[in-house]
Length: 94
Image (cartoon, rainbow, N blue to C red; front, side, top):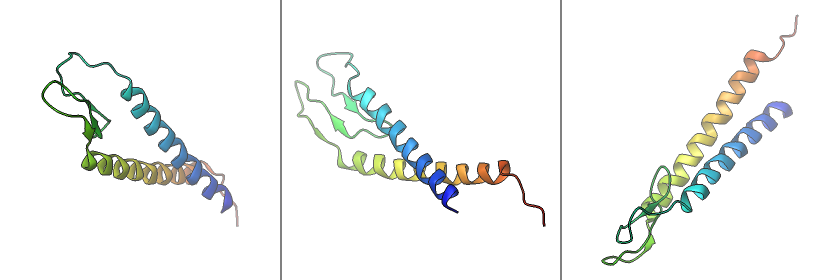
């Protein structure tokens, strides 16, 4: 019981760390031009840099989308870990 709970929590935390690392690395990606309205965020844009014509700002729908995507991926990773552990765990004989 406690082992599977630890596996679920650890797989969810690993998924969150990977998702955060990908978005952190993407934050420092350079824009291709000086006048581009460059979005930041994977899979959804959560921030747009300013350009000559537009202001910078947070894209709130992108923030919500990123949070929901991260939560869904955490649940899927925990379920897959639980399923794999059930397949690999040695069975007790009755």
